[in-house]
Length: 279
Ligand code: A3P
Image (tube, rainbow, N blue to C red; front, side):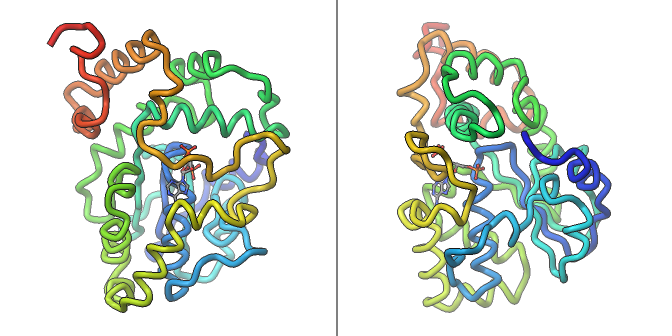
């Protein structure tokens, strides 16, 4: 993933404090989007200006390291891809978890890996080979389901706000309000101001976040997809073969049956019938 190993280690060792809020995701599930919403909630609805980098404003724990984060003034808003087991815990810290269906996640992750040439050397890689790595959990931050399921199991904890990318797409305004309410009264009060909520919804839109993308990540070589790429639910349908659809759906069932993750996307994912697997 190209992060300094000492930052990764010091990120793991970071001692969470009561006022910390973590934005936790498996990669490509809506992290940057949520970071930007949180940043705007802290800045009266103003968007992140050009010249600033969201990963320093809402720092990525394992990229910048625990010391960097510990030195920030409180309250701290921290991005991480750590699993439930690895994330720094504190009973009074807050955790916003954003989940995205694995079909769209793997497509987004493929373009991410292809585009960050300096980290991955995968510019010529095919979707088929990335798909295989994803299915085997051999990608950055490991297995998708190992990440998702423990967080789903904790979705009703008082200090966890569990969101899905798909719900954010369907109703961004209510996601912003849910985040504000979760952060506390002063944030909930802010979004009662129509100017503030309108500004956040506008600047958190895909079209707005598609602009001035140096705010989200380092530049990608010409010809590569931008970081804020397509922002759709269901883009996977134009990338998956019938066999890949069957394989991931089968894995989804194997890994989620009997867990609360089983029904997270029941209206979106292909049914057994569509895959010729019976009812
Ligand atoms: P796609 O590659 O499917 O377009 P992360 O920040 O976790 O890396 O997630 C990146 C994904 O979130 C990308 O998905 C990106 O386009 C999408 N995204 C970022 N900002 C968005 C927004 N404002 N609205 C919808 N999707 C957004």
